[in-house]
Image (cartoon, rainbow, N blue to C red):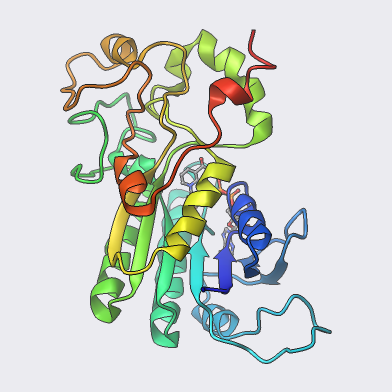
Length: 300
Ligand SMILES: NC(=O)c1ccc[n+]([C@@H]2O[C@H](COP(=O)([O-])OP(=O)(O)OC[C@H]3O[C@@H](n4cnc5c(N)ncnc54)[C@H](O)[C@@H]3O)[C@@H](O)[C@H]2O)c1
């Protein structure tokens, strides 16, 4: 069984759920991040992923939990979950979003390939579909958004994620390693369910993300299943909940907010517009955290 995993960005919103999940399932986890973890679920090696020297060194380092562990000799890494990134536009200048995300991912994949690490899960994004950070309201070519969609975003963040998918495919072609890119929907943590009253009141607030959501704990499960599922080669998979984050039925959301966009399949009453069929089919993933259950004590 795969045992030693490096998570990048494990100090962030989504990555910390991945670290926690893996530790709870018996993995030896080391976090690479430029900031420490708030909860020290695993050891963090402070690393700047845009510096190739640091990345190569870090991936060849011991994942032991601390400097007084019984065995400090570096051991081979079985898998990497790569989440470190600038997670949206307007945090840093556009060129920095692009540089950090693209070079950070190149360095991780390059080092993994040269050090013989045969499994990498890469955080991509639903923004690749091009609506989320578009200059103005933009409609997709069709719904539901699936992995076959001809992605063509205009912003620096989503473009960096498209480039990362291309880079991932190139490294897979070079090495034959398993590299799975997750197009992740809007990640929610337990505290975020308190925002639902406002979101339900005004469905337009979540139009650009096509009402997607994914609980951080369900995302973490998807990462663990991906680590445990070998042999899929290069894959892109949406990671999203089964349902829309709205109490308005999906067909009505489409009628109100995306009139005229072709709908390619018969949708269930509240079915997601970010298709998760591939994730379920390839990894056997099942959603455990639905907003209706999580928010029931908050939403009247
Ligand atoms: N949060 C979402 O809704 C969402 C949706 C889709 C995709 N994603 C992707 O998921 C991943 C995690 O996102 P998040 O929301 O947890 O973001 P976050 O900002 O909370 O976490 C990102 C982490 O990366 C680290 N980091 C940034 N630059 C770094 C560098 N140069 N070297 C080392 N570490 C660096 C940060 O310190 C941070 O801890 C990102 O790749 C993001 O693009 C997030």
